Image 1 (spheres, rainbow, N blue to C red):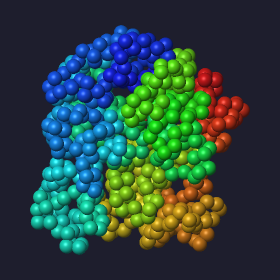
Image 2: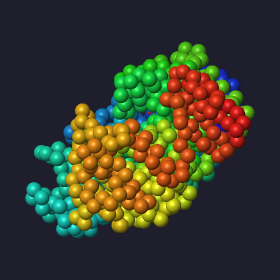
Image 3: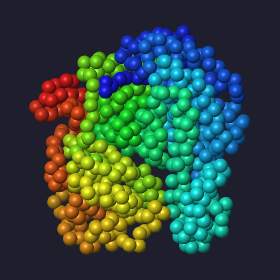
Image 4: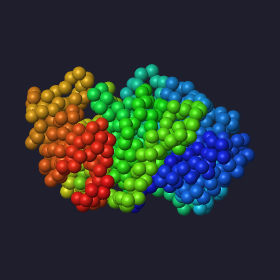
Length: 638
Ligand code: GAL
């Protein structure tokens, strides 16, 4: 597959006289895809049932005739103001009971049936008009589900839909009462219509109630997306896509992705480092203008799995963003590096957000490939460089990695419902494991917890999987791999209660958790041989072969045959040791990498990606500051 570059374009923001020149400049920059329309509902349908297609027809023609492939979007993330007059109760309601008002975007509740019908109506109209247009080569549905905390809604439509969901899941109220343990605090219900969304309770609601609401809320996103898929499938043969946002875990992306053809995500490395990552001040200073060296790769690997091999970066940061607490500019070379890193992980398209910086509204301080005055911003030249390099490099293949990391959205819902310690965060734990694997120079496949086939993997990590799914553990048991699980694995039922048969609830496991503790950030427990336990520790009983112990003799890692159970949250040094032991046991080859350097094997190509702001050496070659290099069977190709 030969990768390509794209850009996000808003013809409705610019005078028509600019469109043809913009399109020609995109082509000159080596861009071949352009995404349009995701926020344009007020210009497509300015009044209910009154459409203005003239501008959109012309924009698609101008872009297409210039040689660009257009990704058309359904504009359902930004319903126009009149929609609220038609459906005053369509807004999502926050946990405090306040409606989330008009005046930005994503102002809808996933459970509002009349709004879903409006979305199907506009998808039908757009699909009929453009579904077979030869310039349209893909469809994006909506924009960034869940962004701005929009998955959970405590509205009346959501509450009614939740009751229906509960009815279909539990059948009788007695079953629900028993499953949730509602005898506790006299919380028993007499009927489904008495059950509310789990907000505004005096103290914490029943975790089983919250977990059911989290599952329901995820299912509502899946259903919302599917409603538009159902319409568009019959109207276009081009791929259906959604653009997910980094570290958004409130709905199951694997479930949404199952209905789509391509997964894509929006990569803002510098914004993420500042805004949504736990890291030391030293780390944040070191990578201030590059982004975290593993955050992008993690999501690339995740969305390769969500898209079942087909994925894009739909929005790539091109310069300073506007939305993080601090917004430094990328160092020279970083836009090229991020683009190549995505390609090394299998991206079919890397699309920059956005073409020209808007001089108005919320994102006026967000860079584009052009400045608002039309002058090229630094990223344009870097995009062109990538396009030229792609032209000489040719196709990039993906093959199964030696190492798999299991990822599971419901575990995030479980641990955020019952963290038991302020720092127990599922993404943070999984990402810590991923980072350690990357520091060891490994290429990784992220796989869903629904995977039942692990052929070819030598090392599998599955940290913090809340549930006790026997089929998953049976599949891991027969995998020809060293499997490292824990902490907190298989410790809760689907209803978020403790399995009374003991934990971890995994057939054949000897070690059992007697007690667990959460630890404050200032407390670390040294481990014999190096590293510390942080945040979380379990006391394991019946350990037959301990592999690691704390200095006060508590088992940290227990050998259970092809499973190793990790009864603690390791710090960086300890994770490095655990990964090194796992590699040794499974015959996976580790590498020594300079700080900031990461490598990725893609078919016969090896990519070296240097997030450091200074040159580093790898296997005798110098890799420039913020530089990328690639070899094919030993021959340098980048
Ligand atoms: C994304 C969003 C874009 C734009 C961008 C700014 O989350 O999809 O529309 O807002 O962020 O960085």
